Image 1 (spheres, rainbow, N blue to C red):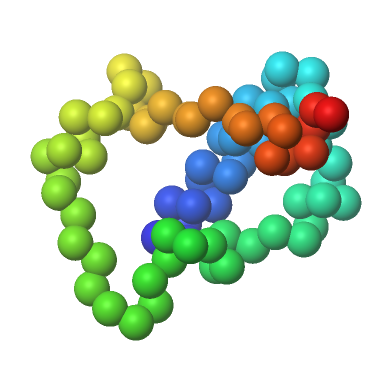
Image 2 (image 1 turned 90 degrees about the horizontal axis):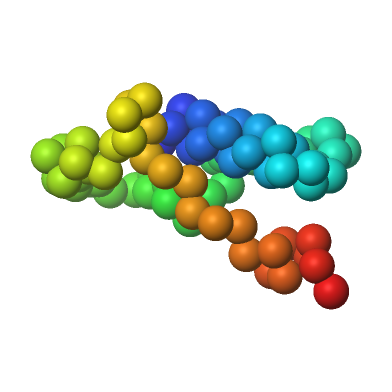
Length: 76
């Protein structure tokens, strides 16, 4: 889960930067994929593999959700 989260953090940052948004390395130094709500350290993670595979785009990635700019502090 940590590796998956790391990949998608990277993809999200690249997407935001490609849109001209300022995502500073200083801010990124304060996030960690190990401190995410989607990480369950104390149990079993059940995944419907077929359903997840159906969500992949032609490149083999799940599409990124649109950024909630106001929540991220990027708009007034």
